[in-house]
Length: 213
Image 1 (tube, rainbow, N blue to C red):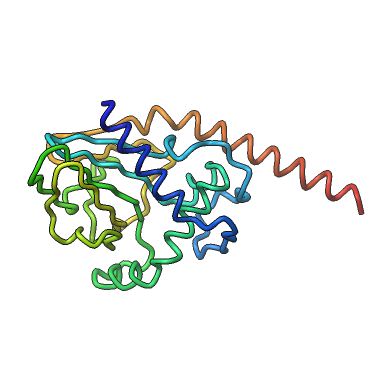
Image 2: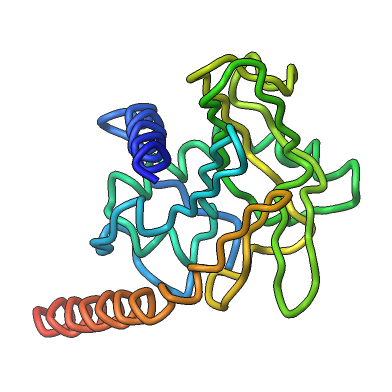
């Protein structure tokens, strides 16, 4: 698991570096925000990251859902939000091919620990309430992604699109062939606590600001 964790750290760092120092938050089109303000979260990107290992293939999966992203630190939130904004045209184009106008989006990394490791993004499966959901398409972020094969220690990334939103407020299982991870259920209590903390701070800020009028 040390290799998986190291790949996740490198992956998160590479995405964080993509956010410019003066990046500004853009109002998102989705109403699925839990009415949480931006910039009050204290959780790291690793808290929203799922790791899988299937043979020589490591997979890192981050749900890009506002209901979980707004629990992250401001820098992590802006990095993820900026990524979605930059590729919004491609996301809409790929989704429209399957008639999906508001897809669930995940940032996914594939990393090989051996030469000539093949991968198939269509097999990154979500299981929720007994139903399985596979990606309806993806937007490559790496030039070599379409090769579907990796050299040793090579890593490629893409945005995977699902027909429904990723159910970040409930338990779900992520799987790839024989590899599964259902740890999300164990994180829900912590997510709820952070959500309540942010809501409390936001109310306090609103009350304090109102008292100055």
